Length: 281
Image (tube, rainbow, N blue to C red):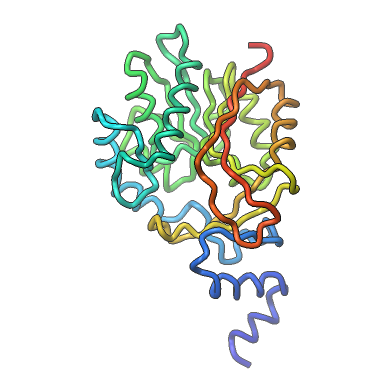
């Protein structure tokens, strides 16, 4: 019996079908997966891979140079070619600047937790946008990214586990393009709500209006990331209801320009941003 046949005997049918789909639909960046989070670890490599870190590190000097210049802030650090003319990125960074200004109002220094902060890209944006404000900046990310971030930004605290960063409170908790990658998103959102003394900003969250929340697979090969990862498309009202139950109130909702087409999805969604504030603030 050949190895393919053996594999089919050992794997559940859903996972065997998924493996075939990975091969047949490799060109499709986004795809609905009805199997959901059961696919974790079955050919889905996730974020903690060397190639992702290597790509981001290689682009770092160019990224920093663009942010610290005087050109537009249309800088998408995920893009393979450095540019200041990405209108979607410009919208995202301009909105972040507004959020940062709200959190820093009448303060000389602020503490920020960047959940899924990568190499510290938003520390660079924050320093450029509000150079007069002192930043106590903490990034929570995966081990490989944290190790690289410490080498590039020794003044930033990088945390590889929750205990490192959730034992104190922050003026602003920023979860940019990150909450959707946690299987138990409610538990994570509750922890982030508990970590802010004033503002929580959930940015670039994919949401839908009609369908129940569902799981999507992304293959980000065009960015040079040789990996795949699962993420939620959350029902917008379900998400808002949960954050409200955590003692937060919605201050402002933002439109993001990201609308990737997801093959076979129950509903095509879009990315939004949500700024919350503690009700007792």
